[in-house]
Image 1 (cartoon, rainbow, N blue to C red):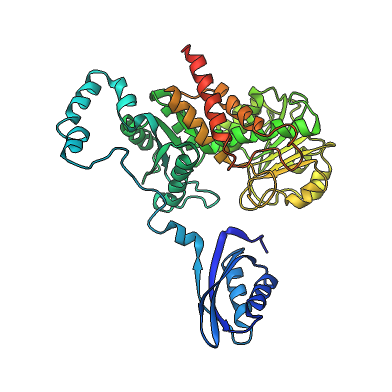
Image 2 (cartoon, rainbow, N blue to C red; image 1 turned 90 degrees about the vertical axis):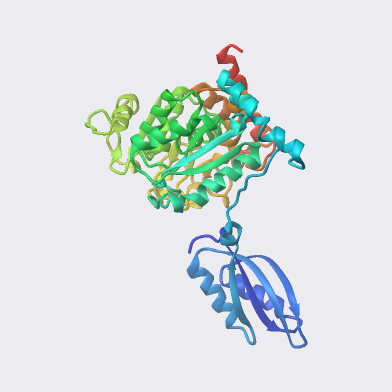
Length: 464
C-alpha cells in the first residue's frame, strides 16, 4: 500500500458509545488500519453516545473504505459520513480578485473609474511603457496551460487542469505577493496557443507556461520568448532545473565532490530532463548521460526528435549505448524525472561511493527512497513526506518577483543559475547534511533571496 498522504485527508464523522475508552478505541482501530490520525474532536455529546470527527490521512479511496470498515466493526460504532478535506478546500475555487484601492464614495469612483481613468488611459496611449507603472501589469503573471500534461495525470484537458493552475496562482501570491491568474486554453494547436498568449500579453508582466506536453512546449516557449517583450518561463522545464541544480550544489558539498568531476545520469528526456541537462552543462558538468525508456541517448543513433538529436550531440561523451541500469553503474549522481520504479536498491548499489540520488517522479519515484538510502549518501525526491523535497515552489515565486521588480523582458541562463545559488545558500553550512540539502518551501527567506538574486542579475545585464 502507498504511504498515507495529506492529499488524501479525510474527516470521518463517527457515532460511538459514551464510554471512557471510545475515543482511544476509535483512534487505535484507525491506526491499525494504516491511517495517520491527525486530529480527533468530539462535536456532540448525548446521554448514551458521542459524535466524533476523526481526521486522518489515507493512501487512496480504497484505503479510506478500509478505515471506515474498521471503525464500523467496533461494537456500537457507526460511521455516518466521510468528508474529503482536499475537495472541501477547492469548493468555489482557491483564489479571488480584491481591489487595492478604496471605493467608498463618488469621489473615489471618479478617480478609479470614469471620468478620471480616461486621463490614465491617454497617458498609456502616449507612452505604452507607462502600463507597467500604472496598471496591474507590473505585478501580474499569466499561468497558461492547455491541460495536456497535468501533474502525473497526462492529457486531462483545460477544465480539469484549472485546479492546478488556481493552486499555482495561490502559491505566487502566498510566497512572493505576485498576482497570477489561470489561463486554461481549449486548444492543442501550437500556433493558436502562441497567437492567444501574444494577444493577451499587454495585460501581463510575465507568462508562466505550465503542464503543456513535450515536444510542443519547447516550440511554444521558444517562440513566445522570441516574439514577446515580457519574460516567458516554462516551470516544468526551468523551474525543475533550478531546484535540481540548487539541491545538487548542496549535495555535492555534503559528499565533498566537485561539479566538474561527477558523472551524472538523467532518466527522462522530456521537458524537465532537457532543461536540467542544459543547466548542468552550463554549470560545468562534463559527463552527462541522458536516458529515455529505450536506454542511453548516444551519437550512434539517429533521432527524429530535434531535442534528442541535441542531447546525442552534446552529452554522453563516451558514447555509452546501454540501458539505464547499466548507465548508473559507477555514476556519482542519478537524477530521475521519468517514471516510477525504474531502478532498485541493487542498481543504486552499483553507483560510485557517496552517490547522490534525486528520484523525482511523482507520486511514486524512480526508486524507493528507503532502498536508495541503503546505498547512496544523499537521497532526494519530489515528495513532501520524505527528506529533501525538490519542489518548484522554491523557485518560481521568487524568480517572477525578481523579474517583475526589474522590469525584465527576458530570462537568461545566468538568472536561472543565480536563482539556484540563492536557494542553495538558504541552507546554512552548519545546517547542511544528507537529510537537509534544500530549504523548506515555507522558509520565509527563500523567495526574497531568489528575487533579489534574479533582480540583480537582470539589472546588471541591462546595465541599469
